[in-house]
Image (cartoon, rainbow, N blue to C red; front, side, top):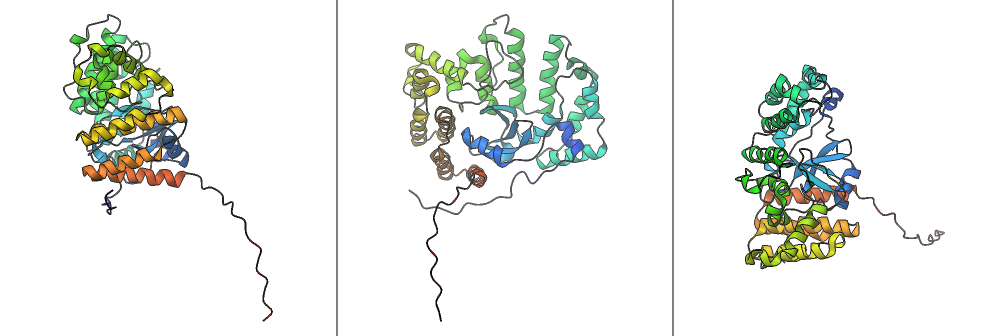
Length: 383
């Protein structure tokens, strides 16, 4: 064991953000994290997420990526213990929140566009605090676009909405990896019924934070890739590919992937069967929802020893997911192991983020009441 070194502390990111009632109403989001939210993340084994606030029951935060500062990590939402990627980085959060999505009437968009200048000022300040640099001009231009607004109304033609959705999401989040992913998603939605060959799919050149979501769409063609992504992340696609993520209380897609690999072991590449990840597939396929993440713990150690440290981090997050599902409890050793991995890998931003989350979770836990009984009081002296 190496000695404990003092952790370099950077200014907290993001800083404190507060919105007034009108601004909150227009984005449907509150920058507030309660003790209950911290305990929810702990119970789900999600110590790798820095929560920013909540949208109704849904927690929204930053997914900690190994070796990256938080301002370069993706935005995710948490529902039923599952995680869905929503944007490539925090700078895209406010436009995503402000976008009303599909609406019954056009005034759903016009209401947001017509918010007071004070509300827009507060929203723009939040945007700037998260790294945005356009003063929200981009999302305001989307809201003012009649073509996109009409296509987003419930009852519009499916084809116009499919095209509009991709354009809206890439204008909200213009990162190249996001553009690649939404191109793939558009193709999958349009071709799902036709059972088009996956060989024709526009595969992302560098999916980055969308890797799990892309693999979930391609499924059989990307089973090995999905297995090596954090379990419980972006694996919600069912028989028919859809735009909206639908987190549910089931790891069905991960089990499906594991069973697919295990059943076709003889046809899989030999290097896969010799890989540290392979026992994870076999264990999930054999144990299903009873699997408690032990194979992932072993994989994390082997991957780290092999110099595949980012994958080791993902294996630890996957182990935490399966352990919490199988036992209903958190395994604090996994979070500690992730902190140690970050420290030994020189990921200072990652280590700091993990430590900050651990401290916040500990502070949110109820303190046990003292059971120590007081002894008899000493008699007073006479002198």
